[in-house]
Length: 113
Length: 114
Image (cartoon, rainbow over all chains, first blue to last red; front, side, top):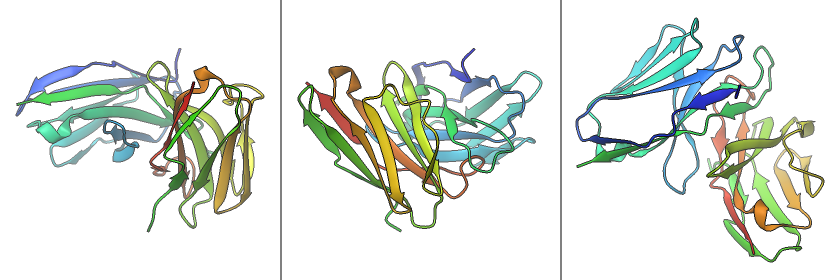
């Protein structure tokens, strides 16, 4: 089983729609989770961290389900500028001070006018 | 802050040639990562350094790939000899503390081997 799995999409949604992405991870010991955003031909950038209780940042909500080992990202009121690839990220090893991040292949979102 | 700086931004080379990619991490960051991104395989970790020391190079595809970090402000990834299947975008990233904290990426080097 791959460490981080995502539906590649693409998700094509109209402006104003609500869209949700899920991601599953294999390491049950993982404690830290992230969503990164990558625009076309650009580098990945941190969108938000995922806390155990879930967290919200404006139109974006991230949630964690440890029992099922999945992380979700919800985008409300989609904007054209939300069009990008969203990468689910988990550290390779937990409880290790310096460990790299493992990236899912990403889910591509296209918001259409 | 200048962020992570990579050079060159684009590289086109002929099969069999040596390619050297360069990275300057953010000052004060003690972890540095080299990733490769392709459409088929996504972002793959090649190697990472903590405090200039290589920790895990199991992601390096084969002996043609090598990476060094002679000091805290500079790292190189070398491919010798290069092959067409090495064509990809190579990203360097740095972080203050590898896992559990944000990794900052450079703009990447787009490598094409013909």
